[in-house]
Image 1 (tube, one colour):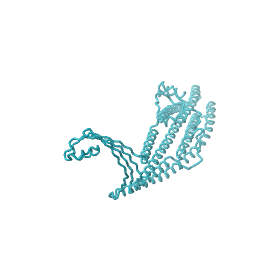
Image 2: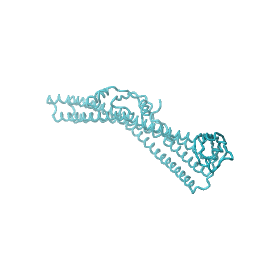
Image 3: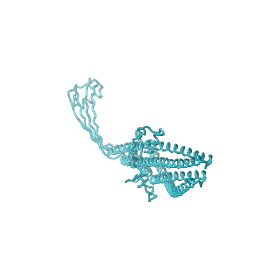
Image 4: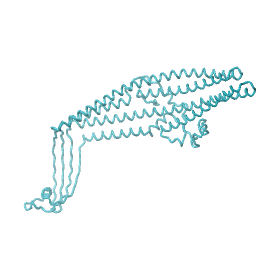
Length: 437
């Protein structure tokens, strides 16, 4: 809460921000996956793809339709047909002037496709591959969003630790300035040296103000990623978050499980199925059908029913080259998707190597900065003791304190950047950025 009080004192947060929530990375990722527009959009795409699968499955089910209509006409042809359907024919009818006749018709039809040239099977395969690709898109969106959440949380932690480090520098300079003032008042220190310390203290306080504003901005970014209202609650990150302990270096460089690659492979299968569907257009289509109809007329006071059943065969003999054009178009789309897959494979391979080298560099810098902090801390402590005993110049003390502050900041940034590099490496390999518990 020290950080919150400092922000309140600076006027960056309102009183309502005193209510802080403690967030773990697991909870933050779950919240973002629930609220994120990207995740919801990917889920909507999955629903749309599943609906296409259901539409493709309809080719193996019978089609049933019912229709009904009531007509009244004096058209000789239509009237004569209604008379026959109503079983009201007699030889005394004037076929040229049958008069006004009404007819109520109800018809039920059942149709079933026996063979479609393989188009139904190809359409179902394409729809299933599309649904698989949409599901992989959702997984990729989850990985990206989880990485963004972890990145936002670590950046917030880095910003707040930077505030703590600069606050330590301010306290060190304040103590040194107090000693310098006492020595100056006693006539044991030049005014220029005393003013140098005061200037350095002012500059460090300015850095502290910038660090606090940076921490406030990082907290706002964390709110944005999670879809939270920053005016209602502040964010407190759990110090010993178990998720950070689970964040370990992968023991593989295989990125074949990357959702983006698997999704493109599924789209290749969908495109190949569409080629087969286009080729099936030149094959015959065989349908079976049966219908039943009932007709009733009030003017003739007669009625009748009838049925019809049969098999139809349709064959496209010549379509002016339309089929050949569709096959060429579908084949070109297959080539495009395959090249997209090859390009993505090459790009992700480079991305993995880049992430691996970045993590190795971050790990080395973390080890170096840790040793530098120990050495700078010891040097600053010795410099303060010598300055108190009037055995060290003010400029040397300022240099020692500045190096100590800089090394602490570099150590803070290196620790967070090593975690960020590890998250990016896991995402590049197609692994969950945050290992499951």
